[in-house]
Amino acid sequence: MEHTEQEAAGPVQTIRARVKQLRGHRGWTAAELGKRVSRHGPRWDRSIVANFEAGRRRTVSVDELLALALVFDVAPVNLLVPVTDEQYRASAIRTVNANDVREWVRGTKPLPGTSTEAQRTFYAEVAMADIQRRGHIVPLGTAYDDTPQGGTSGEHREAP
Image (cartoon, rainbow, N blue to C red):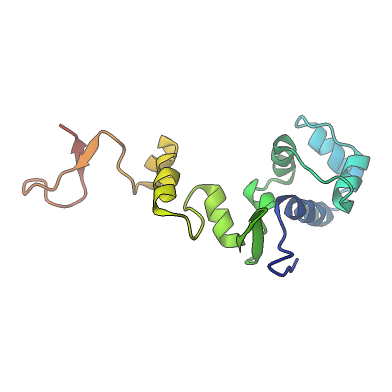
């Protein structure tokens, strides 16, 4: 799926292409995919699948995206953003590398060109579980112990 910068795929086009690709890899009919999606909430059938894949249905809801990810056993980001290194339309006016968009969607880093202030917000709005799992951000209420007794080993202690 190669596009010029002006023709870079966006979210719905990418989901459409990935659905076609993954359904084909599994050898499922449109009716079978519709039944599988319907088991997860959104009511899909052969007609909806065919219209979506042909581009006659121009949207996909978040509920549908998540149901498709469950059905195909893939991370939602890998339906939403190309799994290749190509240009991607992240918004109506912004095209960036798909690798950068995947990092952004995963919450691991802001898009290139993001202002310093916006980066602060991006990194501040993170679930505590993600912060602890990544291990590179000290939770609020703690401070690094850089005293001679504590050394600079990176151990942290409760803030006074």
